[in-house]
Image (cartoon, rainbow, N blue to C red; front, side, top):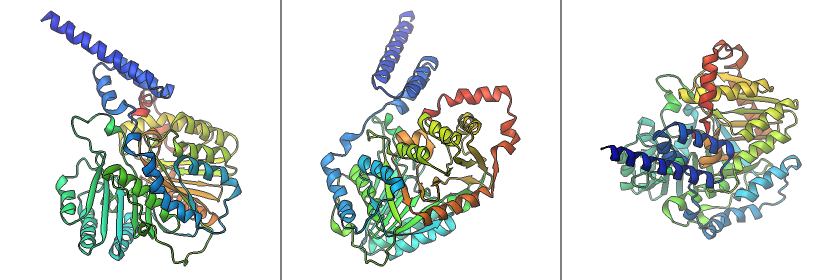
Length: 474
């Protein structure tokens, strides 16, 4: 029996050393590598298990060929080329080129936008557009809940499928872990093409769980698109047992729908291996919208060599002149983003960050506290939203640029998730989203007025600093 114990010990040491070597050879960021090294050394067995499920940096380029991506972006490029008198704003020309060069995220003018700040207004608008669909409906969502609202949307999709409309749905397998398969099978039986994004099943249950599709996209007939932070779930209407939910979603009619369509079809190829590039999915617009509202649909994913979204945020912070307002439900920033925020505030720019007063996960709350205090010490103004859980992901800068989408200010969104945001280079849109942010501020309190945070004991601060070490894993 003694030999068995030694054999188990030797096997464990070999596995741990092999894991450490594999992690070091991956050449990831030093801070992130150090976190995993600490976990592997000081969390026996548990550290190896955590790395097995969440730490492997498994690249996914093999799932999407370069040739297929070129074909999928070809249609949206045609729409881009056909734009007449397209003028890029001088202040953001480099940012637009950054997004375009890294992910084929092309800018489109002639856009009309509706802003929804709760489920009461968003879901009726979504259902109305679904009811009017004639050719196709494309939905890409992190969560498609099997609650009354989920059934209402699925029933609407089934009705359109029975009318002959092409309906395609992508849901994230981890985001919908608790949703029974019968819910999606019901839609499949009605003629809807439904796919889970990167299903997590044994024996492939490794780092797949770490790379999730967090996007919230919808395209109706190639003419109307939705993008923002809302999943398909009743919590956005009735909230949870703990608190109401607040979020922001956009309806876009105009050129930027080409970008949303392209993002969906790339994901569709990922899950279905079907290359859809027919012109009917990129219809010509009737010319009823003529304006200079310039929009760019930006996507990011862990297969990319460049973290597009993070680089975009950093570029905006470095070049801001007057102010940058940001709203996020989770604040676990990468060192690059945190440094950019602190530098921006120290240079005299009005940097404001809004997060929920009550987090939906205690470990995230603990880990984010030290980041918040560090940012506040360097002049970033922190506001805590007290009227519920604010799930919005907003950025507004200098009355001339704004963004809304699925990207949180955390490691997971910047490095691991498949995300999508729309960036507007337009004064009117910037002022409209600024008004949304300022309305949320009226229901918020400054960080310095919250005694629970400002007067934390030494032990609490020590615990928060310890949990912060694991921020890249949260």
